[in-house]
Image (tube, rainbow, N blue to C red):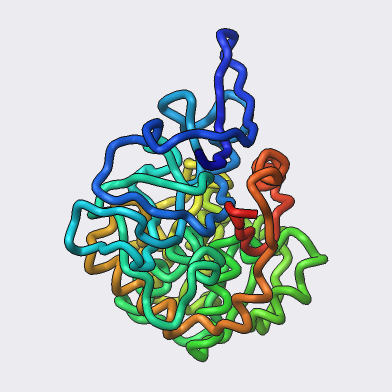
Length: 327
């Protein structure tokens, strides 16, 4: 028997989450059983834990959209007992039981070897959010980052925090957008050279084009903010769009794309090809400064998760929450 955060739904459709003991035979089918050491708290986790269950497709359910740990048993030669592994994506924690348990069983294809230079705690300080941030930075690099500051929206959140630290470590001037003035010192410590209040972006004129300002952008918000940012990009610059917190709509015109050649790059971290996942994790180990990573971490336990799930939906979580599932 081992501990897990289990979400239940009653006959009236209401959900509840509590730590309880479960057994190995309750886990879903898979090629590899992992002794989970750490997981994280992401926006999707908040939806899964919260009222109504959000993205959950089956009950009872163990949320947690990513995890890192040690292979305990395996039917696949690529992952041997004792190997350190990390998992992000593949609808784990939504359609398939996830990382908020001391054991997880998954398909071998979903796992990536933990890169040299990272331990399991650090890997989950990065987590899906940091993995997504690296994918976004890699996409900007592939299309060429232009002269001028690189804008990061939603900078105090998980994706934004890691993107800010990576971009700064690579030598870029980073302009960090936040709606919380109290996070300015935190963002500066990650390497941001300019703090941009959220209202300065949202309250700009609604003309389709404004002054060419940003050489690139990692947008973790979407919606109205993304629409405003598009009109502020330098000619030929790119926006890596990774978030929907501001809504799935895009109240923009085609003018930034036609007259400035702006590239809108959609980043999906869920079903990345294996080689790209390995490349992204190797880049994280190389290009994310570990001292900046430590500054982002908020420790948590399984019993903290219901409150943290609600908090992240309200925008109250800063940086990266690392869940020690064995404490």
